[in-house]
Length: 148
Image (tube, rainbow, N blue to C red; front, side, top):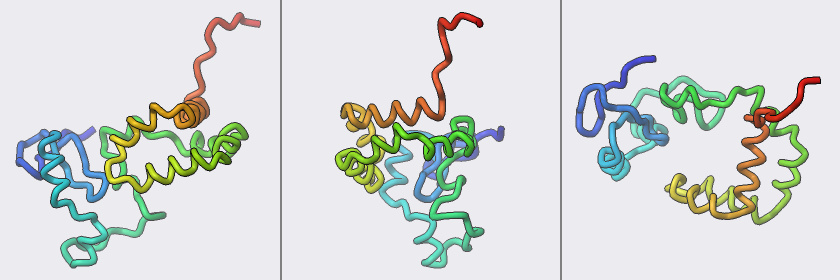
């Protein structure tokens, strides 16, 4: 794994451990994040304004580089496990609930997703959804099972 580079906001070398999800700019701390957020311009807007060369086409609206930094890579869920989500009847049944669907749409459209996520984790239906997803991609270890 590569060492972190300099912070784009304060310039501190080797400190930029975080990346902006909108534009991939590296920064080192909450104060630098706040400073950056005030003037952040998403990559697509910079490209349209001619400030950045166009990036290589991705497979969709987001590429992995837009979402994950190198530090986040260890938390990435393998595609095979993500496909299991689509095969789950329990998850499918939960997603039929219009209230849950509205919560997910609101989260998707929110500017401050982390703050809203903390609030949603107080909502029993959302917690049930999150637990279901987690149980599919990271099944609990079988404890107290006698060998056959």
